[in-house]
Amino acid sequence: MGLTLVEKILSNHAGRNVHAGELIISKVDVCAVQDGTGPLTVQEFKKIGKPKLNNPERTILFIDHASPSPRKELSNTHMVLREFSKEYGAVLSDTGAGVCHQRLIESYVNPGEVLVGADSHTCTSGALGAFATGMGSTDVAVAMALGKTWLKVPATFKIVVTGKFNKGICSKDLMLHLIGMIGADGATYKALEFTGDTIDNMEMSERFTLANMAVEAGAKCGLFVADEKTKAYLKEKGRGDKYSQILPDEDAVYERVIHIKAEDIKYTVSCPHTVDNTKAVEELESKRVKVNQVYVGTCTNGRIEDLRVVADILKGKKVNSNVRMLICPASPTVYKQALKEGLLETFIDANASILPPGCGPCVGVHAGILGDGEVCLATQNRNFQGRMGNTKGEIYLASPYVAAYTAINGYISAK
Image (cartoon, rainbow, N blue to C red):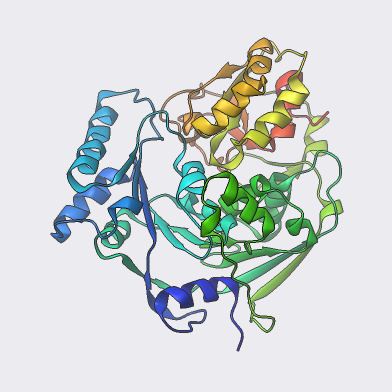
């Protein structure tokens, strides 16, 4: 019986062929935590009693969720991570260094590897052909100590996307469409393996968006076969020598195969308060759904390609006077490239505000928290009630393209 992509990667790390449903012990290549989950991970690691980390050079502590810190309590948790880094030699990605998931794909994760992170969107790195998944703080602490983890091998949904998107449509629309189709729990503990000529032709930034939101369908991970585009991306980031390709077997067994035609995808929005509450933008345009805030950024759509889309639409225009527009590059690399290309000037001229690299308003800890009854359209991955810091706020999710037009018009729109 042939192996799927996730079965191949986990077989390599378990030392034997493994199949969906098996409980295994897998070697771990990279461990990651952030400032929300990291302090508990540190506490649990110390309880284990190990005098050192299994692999300190590939154990990364990110301060990105409350970056820079808005409260003394959060500042104290940041101190815990800084002190642990010094004591045990872990890598520290401090304030302003960017969102953990963007930093992981830029600098740390390679094809064929296993990454466990104490954050649900760790699955972003699956776009590089790695098994990347979120786990609880205690599980990550054990992986930091032993270099191993236990898990059940997930069954796989094969997502076959063919054809070409219509103008302005992108992978965010595709992913929202998919989640709306199968539900927010439709792929619980499954691996989503993306394939088809549409996927083959996608740039890495688009693949990262798909992998990032796999968990929003309940998936354990989102996976892509590493190819020449992956190779070029790794080379650009200074680790071209880490490229390798793992292919699923032709006779691999999939639990479900979903076929999607790219030309059928429309501009799609997730409406409050669940990601699978999706509607085509054209359904909302006629209702003139007004927004108070537009947010572009996060680990989902905070890359340079996303900012270019927004800047191209905003060039020479102004954000609607009733709207606050916030732009948050996902990393310093993205920030510097946007500065170099003049994108930040375009945003400022349009009356948008630029935030430092990090998670920003997405987690509702600081920066961009909504007022009672306010509406935000964001390029992030979640719109649960209270996600942006106020249970009385409403969040719509959409692509950078839709975000830009919405900011100009003052209501949800794609034109």
